[in-house]
Image: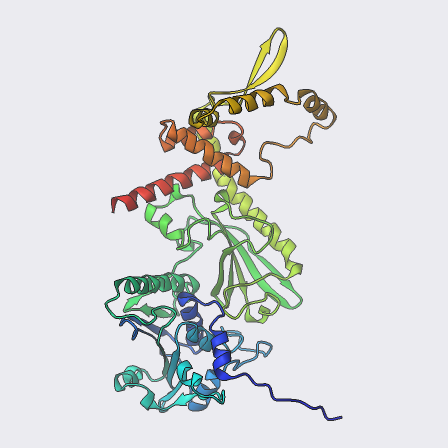
Length: 507
């Protein structure tokens, strides 16, 4: 039986406008374009972000293999390759959308000029404003060298082969502004530096070694950012493991980065990454050495906390795992298969435990150095042969609450009520029947512990202690003395933030 059908192809303008909303920002868009350059064997990539108000432009040039006229037309077609097709193991693409989708997310006019060895230049352009005037909805891909100025056509003169992308009408980044708009120009410069940081991280394994690739941004080389500090010799490498599902295999290797006391202040600041130490803990997922995920616990039920920030775990995936790991179009997200979650959780816990032990050790050293003398929240008293407990009014947080309250009577009444109704008999009975069943303070409640630490730390500082003195007192104080690794990490972070704020204030 012959099936009946209608042709329901999308209009060019409508589809392109929809594709612009994939969620790229400038750094991820440029990184996606560079995937094509690397797949084409480029050894040098030049990126220029040129400010000229509404006429600003982004140019991305490489010395890769280039394309013929036929290959260029195919490459300009959205969905030019299927994600289910077998690909070269070194191919960094997947959907056949990256170059087009990434580019038009930032500009309304994408022009590609390319040349293979001993071939003529080929030029094609997607112009969204032109397409919007084509009422038929046809996919009119503009062509011809006349689309470009003579000086643009000369950009490949020094290369035997290569490709250049021109992004014009940067409505997302710049908009319709004059060249003397200082606010937008400043934003443009800041985004350029964000691009540098992102490329240094995403392609750091391509930027080092004997066969390294050179990436230049506005005339300056992009230096690699190694999240594992392998060259320092100070990171602790955990045993690597090979995991997989079916025939797919990949390597997992954990690293415990050195505590800041073991490296220079400059190295410590650099290792933090542009999102900071806390944000960059967790798994780093690579696909063909290209970084996809820069620090995440992958939904394994683990939170990013200060005392785990030294733990970073590398996963090296081949591109054959794209489907099972749900790699997205932007190549910025990945989700492990259900069959691997148990092993990944085990590896994560081991790395987190080792990272936490560094702060636990430092915290206990501080405790031993300082000795006893911490403030207790409860006071144990005996009167007329009877034992009872009272809230310590001299505890820093209690004293702060009482001092700042305009009406102290309700607070004192509440404290008295709590003191008089402590369920001591029930606690004694429960402890006798099941000694190990009583939860420790803040057990399994790290967010509440952190909140309490912040409040007590602030109270100590406001009462006249220096941040260092407040930290030393905090680590001796119940119940925080049971969590030396968390307190040590918290105090370290607080000191860093205060130094950073003081530095900015001095500028």
